Length: 224
Ligand SMILES: N[C@@H](CCC(=O)N[C@@H](CS)C(=O)NCC(=O)O)C(=O)O
Image 1: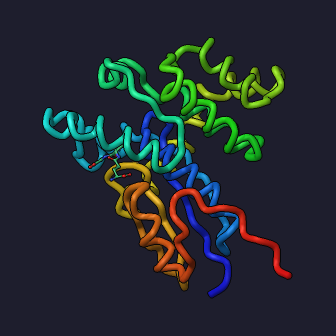
Image 2 (image 1 turned 45 degrees about the horizontal axis):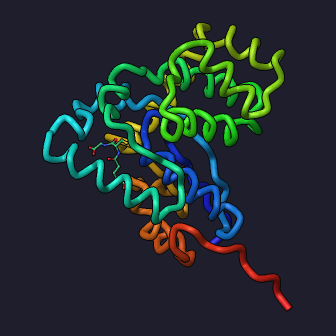
Image 3 (image 1 turned 90 degrees about the horizontal axis):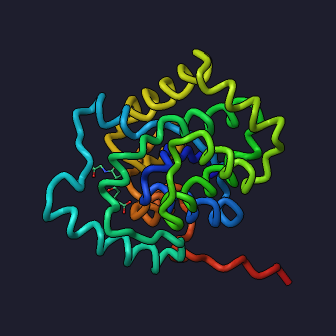
């Protein structure tokens, strides 16, 4: 099998997307894949598929808190949970953040990885806001964007081009069959295969003929 294109559809409001993102970032240097980040809007996926945030079922919310905590430790990603985590999700739309990330994707895609990570760190490790302009400014600075670029991207987020691009990416995810995030699409022999969840990357490995070395693979030893 040649190089496989693996697309990751994600939203920074989704903690499971962060887990999937970090694991794929690790494996992009080990597997024969081209990893493509596809910033999309989880709220849009929920709306167009009629799905609801899983925590709306109280028993599931109770379980999710434990699951995310255990997954964060096992995956070695610094997701931590605050008492009011579900209220924070409801009170913090990720639309502005995802538009900003989309603008970066359209302008300077090399910043996608650090920028997305800094949004997750702010929201899911530091438990701070990501919806206000000041928050976006702080995240952009941490991700190493110049103030000129940040200003340019901020201006872009209200443009039809960025709004449409985010909408189109979200619709594309739904077309592949996504109903939540992370949604991972691997293109094998010209056919797209959709995987839902950060816990399905082992299965992805088997489909693309690669070896699963756990969520924290160590760097391959140099060939002698
Ligand atoms: N088991 C999955 C769970 C992923 C998950 O619950 N994602 C949320 C967003 S953070 C979602 O979109 N859920 C939709 C659903 O469960 O139907 C994993 O480990 O990644």
